[in-house]
Every structure is written in structure tokens, then in C-alpha cells.
Length: 283
Length: 283
Image 1: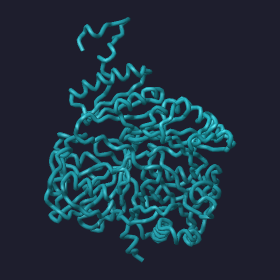
Image 2: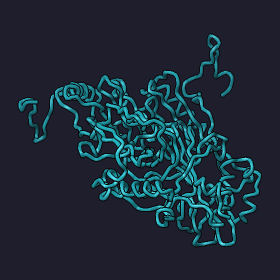
Image 3: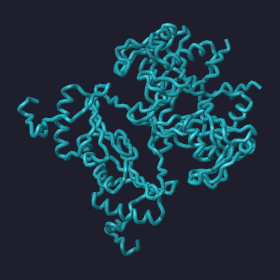
Image 4: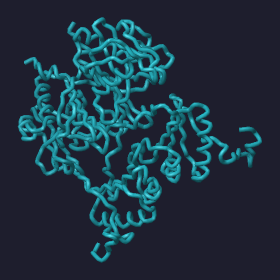
């Protein structure tokens, strides 16, 4: 765009509609990311979008990401009519995407998994912390189960296990190990589910049950929990109790946590691994 | 609604706008799920939606899920203006949600994690299968890394590891163990990342590299891979090589896979656990 096409009005650059490229940043994969942060007339938006595409095509751009905050909901319909498809959404924004090349799209898929934790909390009396829930599949069944819950976005698995136990039962705990995990599909709409079974050590013992979702909570003799009919019928209940039995005899090693940095960006994360084997190699 | 308000026209029940409840199914948590499958005029939609809410409120309903397929994109703006918020989106639909009660929302969060796999493939010559990528953070760096990739929706972790190795290098493999996993946050927009490091056994050995994303692939002496400068600088590279060293001496146990059914719905899934300890308790 040459200078004479960008007249200054009160110090603000005023672009002619249709000769302006939407503000964007480049991603690392030859694509562009557009975030529409200011209120925009749908007709202006479409004209500017079309002009932007002529530029991006000639520059060999690949994926075009379009972030529309909730306040720019008026641009969703025009964007879809221009060929954008939904990629993902959060409460406050919708992300759409358009793949320019003829070749197959390498746009990464949306987040695919919900992550849940189950917390095995054993005390020194060989009792396990169990609850009965007010909602969900097991309500009214009389089944006592370990506290479970969904890991929040941005929350560490070990922290979620500690939080869920505290919320549901009032018990304070320390994280010890991930004993096992389970992956299933189509668990939550089309999403898959990763369920991490965590072993925690209690540091308090008086139960204060939460009323919203929990019907009852107790320290239950481990043998009573293991002998519930569901433990024999349900493979996952059975495995959890089997691992607990081994664990009480110190004959099972799960994955402990270790702070680490990631491959690429030195971002802090947690690695879960068999620390016992890492620290005490047999040779 | 009384009979005289539902006149029959050509055998089809014709509801007066604003006296009809949107078609819905109930969920297990006191909420309703509405899927708008037929083209609808936005004004009719709003009138019907408002009437539906009067009914749902009086019935004590909690969460209202609204599924708008891409073809019903014209209802997105009216739904948001009526107070709906985005919950999640897939390429072909947008899911919105509205929480009716005064109490805090217990609407489950959207899928929060992207899941990736890294594949450690060792052959009998103490060589490790490594690649250089055309895109991403390490492009042009000369770093040799294990094949990695994103787990597709509905795909098992072990299957994703086998698929990625085959796609990137042409090598056939069998899954052995998850050696460790790593959780980081804000890895993909606001989403968290779970990265599973899998050990695979090669069953073929001739490399056929994929051209789209892979610059080069080779069987590299394990010691050469371990002595790359990045292995000393990057914690995750270091841990992977340390575990591999232990593994080659059979001094590390990861999690093997075991088919299982889930807690609630007898859905088939895979459990990953320390099978060695499960099968060979010391006592």
C-alpha cells in the first residue's frame, strides 16, 4: 500500500476499505494469526478479509487463524460464509481457521482430551478415603468410590488430586505417585478422557464433607472397600484395589513427579517417571 | 400447552411462535441439551428460546447446552445476545452453554489438554531412531530428536506412537511401555500439553522418510544421540537418554498397557500401569 492510500485523519491512519490487510502476527508454521479486538462492521470486515487473502495467497501463507472474542460475535456468520471453519472455543472467544494451500491441511487438531484424577488416600489404619456422589452414574447405588474430579485448564495433575480430596472431604494430603492411568474415548461429547489414579498421603484426618456434590464421605477399612460387589464386576475398581494391596506391601512402583523444562521453550513442567528406578539402579 | 393452541396443518403440528419449547434431551446432571438441526429464522429462534427458558426455569433445570452446527451459524449471534457463552467448538459445530441457577456453575470445562507422543525406538545395535524436522522450534538447528506427534481425537496413545514412527520414518514397531510423561501449560493457545514418552520395538529397519515434515531420519548410535549438546542443556532430552540407558540394562520399568473397562459405562479403554510389579510381586 503506497502512502497516498493511507490518509491521516486526526492523527489516525484511515485505510480505504478493501485495500487494507487485517492486523496479524505470523506463526512458526507459515501461517497468520488475526485477533479482532475492536468492534467492526461486518461488511468492512468481509471486504478487508478478502483483500487480506489476496495478499496472503501471493505470499504463500498457509493457515489463517481468526480469533473472534465474544464481543465480536457479529463477525462469526460472515467469517463462516467466507469459508472459515470452527477450530476451538473458550467461554470468551471463538477461534476459526482457514487453510489456503491446495495441499492437505496440517492445522493441528483442537485439544482432544479431558483430564481427570482419582485420588487413592490410605491412612495408617489400612483405611481408604471414599465418598458417595450426589450426581453421575453411581448416584443412589450405595457404591463407595475414591474422590475423583476434572483437572482444570492450567492445573498440574498432582495439584488437581490434592485439590479434589480437599474439596470433597476436607482432608489435606501430599502427592506421592501416579499409580496408573486410563485412556478412553467419546467420554465427553467427542472428546477422549485421560484418568490418572494418584496415590496421596493424608496429613489431616477429620473429614469435612462438601455438600454440593458429595452425599457421604468416610475412612473405610480397605478390605471393606475391596469387597464391594462393584470391585469384582468393574475392571478398573479391581485394578485400583489390586495396586493398593501391592502398594501397602511396598511391592508396586508408580510414577513420581519431577520438575522439568520442556523440549523447546524452557517452559517449566512436571515429568512423571519411575524415580525409584532412576535413583536406585540395580547395577 | 392446551390442544387448541396446536392446530394441525396438513397433518403437521404447527406451534405458535413463543409457545413452543425447543426440542431437547435431558442430561444426567439436571440440564438439557438442544441441537438445532434444521434451518431456523433467528427471530423465531429467539422467541422459542425465551419461552423454553420460562419452562426450564420453572422445572428447576440447570445447564442448557446449545449445539449449533456450522449450517446454523446464523443463530450464533442471537444466542450470545440471549446470554449464552461458548463452551467448545469442533470444525462442524459450536457448543454454547447457559447456566440457569443462582448457584455457582458446575458446567464441566472444555477439553483442556492436547496429547502428544514421543517414540523411543532402539534396535539391537544400540542405535536410536531419530529425525530432523522441517518445521517447529528445532528446524535448522541440526538437532536429532525422537519422532513426535499429536494424538488424534479418539486415538490410543500406543497407537499414535506406532503411527507417528511409521509416518515419519517408515519403520514398523510394537508398543512396549510408556517410560514417562510430562505435563506443561499454555502450550497450544491456552491449552495444556501431555507428552507421553513411549518405548517401541522395531520390527522393520529400512528407513523411508516422509518428505512433508521430516528433513532427515536415521538410526543413530545411542551414544552419539546422548552426546548432542542439547542433551546436556535440555532437561527433557537428558531424562529421556538417562531412562534409555537404564532401559538398555533392563533397570527401568515403565507402564505397560492393559485393555480395561471404565468405571461407569463399561466402555473399553486402555490402562497403563507397572505390569511387572502387578505380575511379579516380590512377596
